[in-house]
Image (cartoon, rainbow, N blue to C red; front, side, top):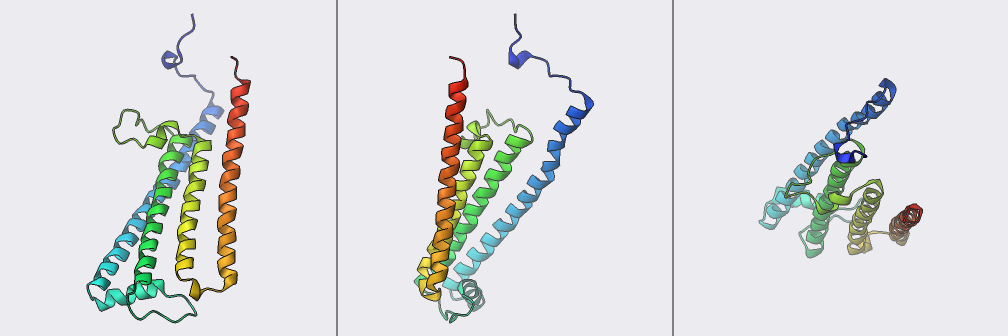
Length: 203
């Protein structure tokens, strides 16, 4: 009678395979570094939000900082807080949040996929997507997150379109479309691979 996989003792690896398998822990400093990058983004978010609130309340130092943020090189610098200026700052905050979400997916999903299990199966706050994450799913989710970030940058350009040349707007639009088609190609390739694997399984 065969022993169930869950009760099967761990395989004793030879030295070289064990060393190669243990080399996955070299990625741990990379994920810890991304956590520090996440801290930098959190700090940047609160600095920008504090200055936006201060500018609305009439703080001139905060106002100057906000105007510097939205100013475009070679164009006339804004002199006051307008609806378009506020929208550009808010889109910048959304951009920070989306990049932060991307970092979380890379940190948690990448560690779970390539380094070690996190053991979150019974945790009430386990992300829904983590229950079925693998290298293919993670790749698709990262592509979609990059498209979202690109959309925010493109929207910021459209809001301030008068400050850009048509060539710049067209170039950004083309780049966004390349991201979109790349994500579709990745999803389609994964679909083909999953279909091939299902066909090869014995019925």
